Length: 146
Image (cartoon, rainbow, N blue to C red; front, side, top):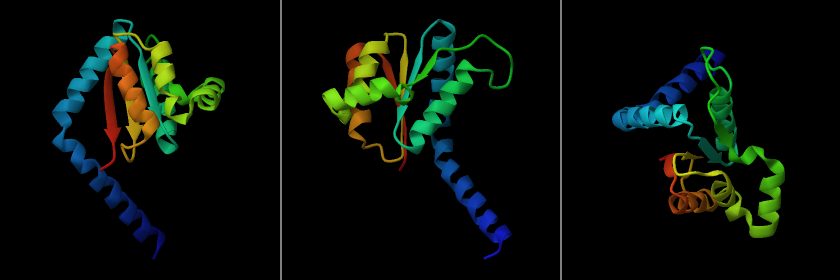
C-alpha cells in the first residue's frame, strides 16, 4: 500500500465514523445550546473519560477555559482525570470505580453538566459517575461508541 492509499482509507473511515452523528444532529444542537446557556449563566462542565477519551476530555476543557477561536471570557470546564492526586487518592481509598463519582459529588452543582466520553459506554467508573450526577442534580450526557 502506498502512503496515498493509506491516507485515503483513513479519511474514508473518519468520514464513515461521523455519519451516525447526522442521525442525532438535533439532539447535539440542543446539547450545544443548553451547554452554552449553562456556561454563560455560571454553570460548569465536568468531563470524564478513560485513556484516549480522557485526552479528548482535557482538550475540550482546555478550549473552553482558553480561547478556542475568538477572545472571550473563560468558561468553567474541568477534566476530572487531570487532578492526578485526587484521582489516585480516590482510586486507592475507594476503588477505581469511584474516581469520577466522588469528584462529581465534590464539584458538581445542579446547574452543571457532566459529559462522559467512552468508546465502549460500559466503563464502571463512568457509569458510577453518571449515577452520582443524577443524585447530585446534574444533567448528564454521554458520547459513546457503537
